[in-house]
Length: 163
Image (cartoon, rainbow, N blue to C red):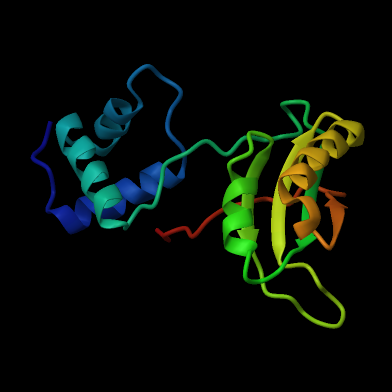
């Protein structure tokens, strides 16, 4: 093993390696360290530092919903009072059936919705059942809603550092 390169250099090569995905092995960070030619402790320390500083916000799984059998993906959109949207959004986002939830500005008069919540199901009937859970949480605060179903798969990636 070679000595760890200075922090900034290691950070760049480490982030590039992590954005390719962690290897599916028992000790993925050790495998990354071996590939980079650095000590595993150095990789783990830098990852902790990058997470703590906010340079990396999170490390998580990005599933392919279709391969998992979740063929119906619906973005539910809701019209709720702007004064209540943050509290209601927190409640909706806490539901197990919601993969992500966020506030967006209205675009009146064409677009009245300000609360978005993504749900996935094996079919549209399952999605509709999950939407009923959201509607129950929102109650009469939901003045209107709709659901936008995915019609094709788009490749999702975050910001990537170049080579």
